[in-house]
Image 1 (cartoon, rainbow, N blue to C red):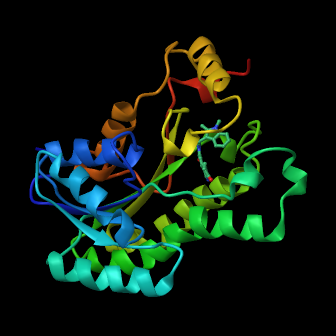
Image 2: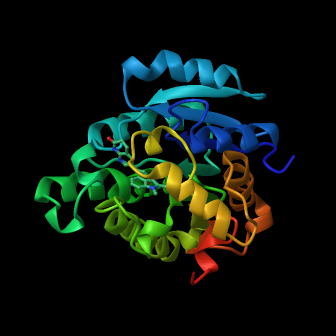
Length: 255
Ligand code: IMJ
């Protein structure tokens, strides 16, 4: 029971296939008390159903990471639900659909703003509110992708967004380290989730990852959940400010 007696918040549980839900399952199975967030009231019931599917206790709180007022309200509710917070999984990203095709060089100012705001700034927005609740130390984990450091077809503005996210992990780790709050990212291999739906060429990307990665298989949500569990637990107490690759080793190959 690696997370016995601990309470954590998970942002980005959209459905059963979500990486955040795999993290929730892994954490819940290790005794954690969970708080799942959803963007608005419209998604509340579906999120409750997901919470009920977990082995342990899980509550639902509305939190739209693109709105300071929503983040403030959610923080207040969370502070009331738990005497203290121990961990948070940030598994949120969004870019306008039209930015995820064609040439990166054609990115619009508003497309850049939306992608960087929702996918990168939101980590800092969450950290500044939740870290003060982590009075006995804590662990914050976010999700990244190879597109942060290499060019991936159609990933476009999400590349700079994930690069900013990974840089933010380092700066947040430095800010919150003295109070025992660790901040890390998991860089997952491609997985067919809602965030990959309708992305042109995604099947080919999965095939290539499987063919060329050292482990010769695709990444599963369970693998990401278990690596995240490690980063959330005290097993990783000496680890902060880093990106952990969970991609069958794909990133290490030259060709
Ligand atoms: C997303 C776009 C292009 C290529 C992609 C992805 N590859 C992978 C993803 C190769 C693995 C999924 N990924 C890592 C993401 O970060 C996805 C972010 C995303 C997805 C959507 C789809 C629906 C939408 N906006 C989005 N914004 C961000 O409207």
